[in-house]
Amino acid sequence: MPNPVDPEKREVRSFLVSRDPSIDRRYRPCPERQVALFQNLEEEEEDEDDQASDDSVSVASTVAEQEGALIYLRMRPLPNETPCTSYRILGNVLVTSQLDNSGNTVKNQMEKHFTFSEIFDNAIDQHAIYEKCIRNKIELEESFTIFTYGTSGSGKTHTLLGDLDKPGIIPRAIENVFTLYASNLYPQPAAKVVNAVVTILDDESMRKEMLLRQTIISACNDVQSVYNRVQQKIASEHGFSTTVLENNSVIIWVSFVEIYNELVYDLLSPIAPSATTRRQSHKIVSNDGKVFIKDLTSVHAKMASDAYKLLTFGLQKVKYASTAINSNSSRSHCIFFLDIIKFSHPGTFTLTSYKFCDLAGSERLSKTGNVGNRLKEAQRINTSLMVLGRCLDAANNNQKKKNADVIPFRESKLTMLLQSALLGKEKLCMVVNINPSDKYFEENMKVLGFASIAKNIVFKQPISKTERSARYSWFVVHAAQDKRSTAAEDTSQLDALLEENFTLRNEIESLTAKVSRLEKALSQQEYDLRNQLVNNFQKSLEHRNRAWEDRLATEIEMVKQRYENKIEALKAEHARDLEDLNEEEGQPKKRRATLGD
Image (cartoon, rainbow, N blue to C red; front, side, top):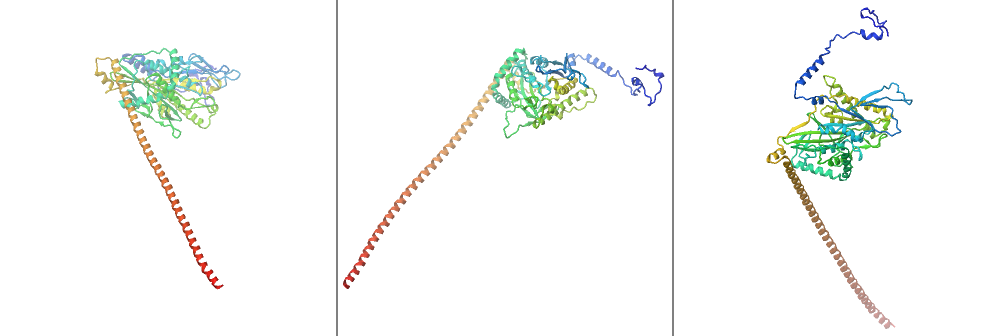
């Protein structure tokens, strides 16, 4: 490197004789615009002073406002014979470098580092993943959205659903939620989230919701033994505790949707499509900052087994197909909703919403070999995942700008449903799944790049629980009727009255149905008797007709025989008369002959 040149003694160079590149940066012209370098620092110091002076803002809330998305990485176990030389784990950092056959780094392939909230290697089981990712959020009653992301066959569905021996995140979350609120679960569907607003239901609406629950749950009675096995497994691995909330009632609702080919389908609809009809798609509505699915079926879950049966009922309708990578590949995005309505007796509803999203795997045609319908499905899946990446990228860029750009939520049904989490209104948790085989290195690099964008997002908007005051709540009216009784006694009395009301309504409905069946049976019996009388009358007429025909034929034969006898008698009489005439005519001839002789 040449010696640095004194700026005062530097010689003038022309464009024909350029400066040495190593010192060129020293002589570049400085911009005329002056920038106050310490202005932002002073503003931050002022903000910190103001925040420290305000006693109502706690340190915990300040940290929560700046908290970003939690991005976890899970690596799928590989067979012993499968090589894995491209990935190294250093704490919470994944180091990737593609190696050639000789063990050297591939040319033009730099070593890359990806930071995660935590990395789960092959030795981590389902129990540890749930404990580190979800349990704390449920016990803190924070609304969150969790989705699994990765290539096809990387273990996303296994992480979220699991199997009988290794239950996934959703079955464990169901047990955790129902155990947490076990002492405060309200047995009747008194309140429901309708169009993203908590609404109190009247008696008729409650009766319909109970009948809907019984209809769907009764169709899944064979799942009870499976649930018992899963529950025992979860209970042996977790020690979920019950929180007693005084003067509070909790109502839990379950919904389940599928986004297939950019159409939203209700997986809990009790109406099964026939061979001649298609499934009805639903519209996503965004109203006043709230997003909901129009006419979506929500089912009241009284216990954990109900929620598990509803999950199983919906999974039977999910689209699966076989590809070259995965023999049972999901062809759609599935979102399982748990809405928890907590009512406090002063008259306030609090809504906590949990969304569990199982994203379809990103695919490359060269690896899957999809054609026909599978190819169209893969194109729609990749497009929706690309829009999700654009939304995360826009959210990441907006935190660096004063004038935020519009995040393209409306370009995909998936991002429309997940926009609350992408805007920071809910906790966002993502479990990235990769298949650490060397042959999927390029696909995994795209997945890791997607995860790195999400990891850099910091949500500055505070997360608040949705609350609504109930002005004319029948809960409050009932509590005011007997102030001397305790809240537990009021709740038990109300439960008994509602149960009796429900029983009487069911009895009335069963009696009405019985009367209707009897009327229908009597009508059918009357119809059968009328038909029998008509048939008997017709048979009698036919019998009489045949008798008259036989009698008439007999009389005709008798008359015919009588007339034939008369004809024969007349013929015989005429023959005798003719003979007599012939004899009379012959005697004169003989006499004339005699006289002639």
